[in-house]
Image 1: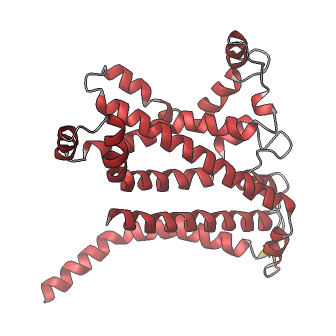
Image 2 (image 1 turned 180 degrees about the vertical axis):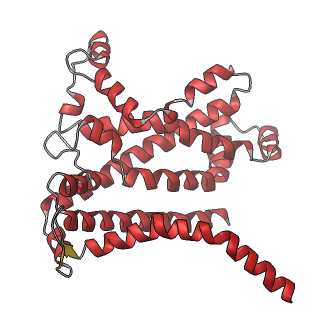
Image 3 (image 1 turned 90 degrees about the horizontal axis):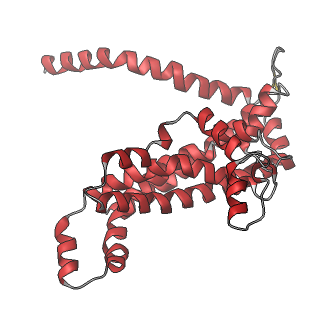
Length: 289
């Protein structure tokens, strides 16, 4: 008994640095941000407690609702693109056993690039005057586009850029799921004379569902707090056409120095992210049964 208690104490002592680090680096900033969200606090000034006034102002703020709409629209659009094309690339890599290793590396390389590099690269490609994108459109007889400068096209364009970078990441997750599927099921389907599409729709896709939900969870955390590519390419423009909650919170906090209101925006976004993850986690438990 005493030996068991001693072992527990040793384990507690060994885990204490990790617990303290987590508390200092994660818990303290999070709860301090919650406290700031209940204050009227400007950068360089002193804070005064104002109850829930920041949240009341947020509900009445048209820019908040616009940012929420853009955040959710960009999330859905990017997630659908990445799941569809990520699954396609994974199936392609899985079925092409003899595919040259260099081609595989090239297909999965975009997500290892820094967001700054990706953003600057696509700014040049999509430049309305000198970009290669409009040159390619002219070669096939299509009219040029203003891409990131167009209020109608900026969200699809940003979703396309993010999907170009992160589709390979989804493909790697799905590829791991494909490699874990039992081959006996496919042998039985082949004996029954099932076509490739029937095999994919009736066998592969249902068996891959837990893996796809896992990929959805991982990408949801990033997509709902999407910041870097938008800030590099549009900074929320043109106008407010790509002004997500993250960009709006950054503007309020570091351009207008309204730290209290920006904290309320970020806590609201954190609740949205946490809620989405909890719902998707419960979904994964159900499909895994």
